Image (tube, one colour):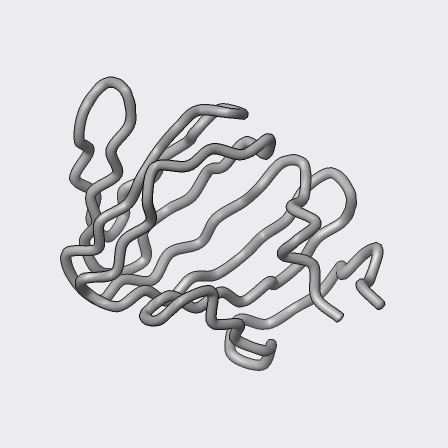
Length: 114
């Protein structure tokens, strides 16, 4: 059974979930309105062009990635932040081993933990 609310968490103590080879997620906190996740992504990993209802914002903690959306490519590295609106298509190429924090509004049901 998935939790409705998870008000506290720790990126080092929570379970890492492998979404695909080279891409792991830690769901840190959430309620119905917002969710905070931490991602570990290996160099060479990629996410195909996709979109979702949740607004997605984040900040790169370490590493380097390239997000692509309709206005072109965006090279981001440690300290850079980003935001994608609801249903805004975007893809990701990982240029170095990377870690980043992301917030989703509303919370993504498929990312809630048991």
